[in-house]
Image 1 (cartoon, one colour):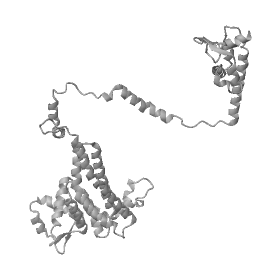
Image 2 (image 1 turned 90 degrees about the horizontal axis):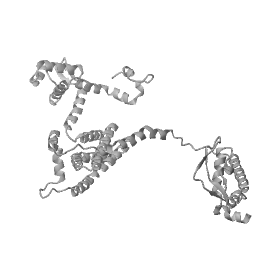
Image 3 (image 1 turned 90 degrees about the vertical axis):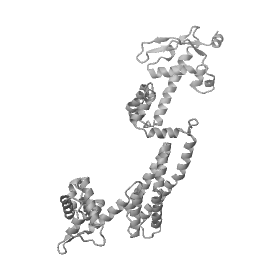
Image 4 (image 1 turned 135 degrees about the vertical axis):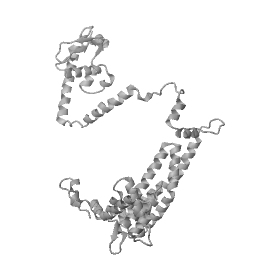
Length: 429
């Protein structure tokens, strides 16, 4: 067994390799894993010939023992030096054991296990049979009463991968991709059926743990989702067939042309396009303004959103709000007193600066906004100083120019004037 202490350099300081359950499981199986290290270490040619010799030595079930003469006769087609190197490597890795008393060679137990696993893998080698290999691993575990959770996970993962590939093909709206996916589904159909039988047997086994049962149910659901796509392929292909464009009476369609173009090389396509396109295609969707707009958002706008303070302002206390309201009321009353004194001014008017200009900008702006109440019929029905302002017999006139002021906070003001309304002037006289 592999000593886990030798792996301490691979881990962070203070972490013991023994604390990792997955590593403990691999370490326990190291005698069998070491067989594969011996077989697959080296170049591709060396590995291939090493597997050839080992499989030949394990193929004689009726006479599993080999004398040196038997080996030399069986591998007469190999170079003697190369054969001796391969046999020496197999002996060093404890795959081939020599019995000095009997004078013959035999495969070790771990070599038999490795050959059995390789035999299953080699038999399933080919296109679209990986699902069958994964299902066979689950079925083998079920047959001996030892279902591997990892085998179930690999089978479930492969089913989900196939479903994602088929779904992507449907979303692409490409007839060629959909047909290829449909052919792929037909090729794995028999393995899905086998897997369904295996899963059905697992769900009926009362000895399974809840984790294994949940994985078996997830596999059954994944299979049903994937098989439901079979009808979807047919409907989507029928829709695409209705959209084909027939090229006159030649019998050709746009699909035939597209398929022919897909099988041509780049040089052939370039030759077909030579002299046909007068100007290069310019992607209008990549114009400079659009690129600048996107770049501005990515470089500036996104940062502004991150730095923007979305916090709510602190709530004002009732005392502060009442104090501000009282101050505004006093300013409105002061403006009323000032305007009331202007009622008997002779015709010609008075500049609004005489009424609204105050010591601060805020007070001046507030007084100026109150002038809009003069003569307002809706405000006349209110109570208090607002109604009194609305009932004053004054009106605004002029205001086309701007006056520059010598004021610490107000730079300019409209040249509008306050005049007495005609009705008020007549009553006064």
